[in-house]
Image (cartoon, rainbow, N blue to C red; front, side, top):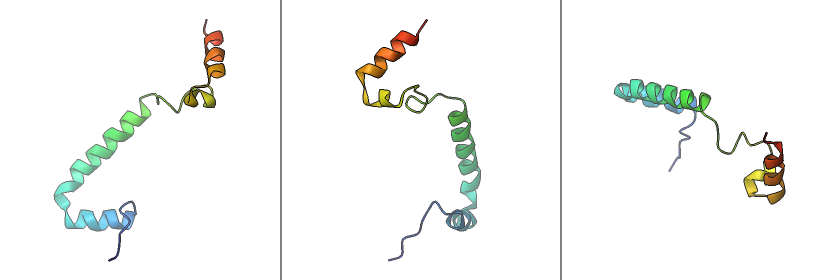
Length: 68
């Protein structure tokens, strides 16, 4: 059994050729996802201190001290 890598462009083009009715919904979904990614803050990626992700008490204290 050969497993195909669905993230490859060649797979996506072959799939699109076999299923032309799914092209527009796919493009719409990709565009909406890209727009949402570009216009929203990540709850993890934009933290000022990397160790805050792990709940480090020291980094939380630093953040409190920085607030005006």
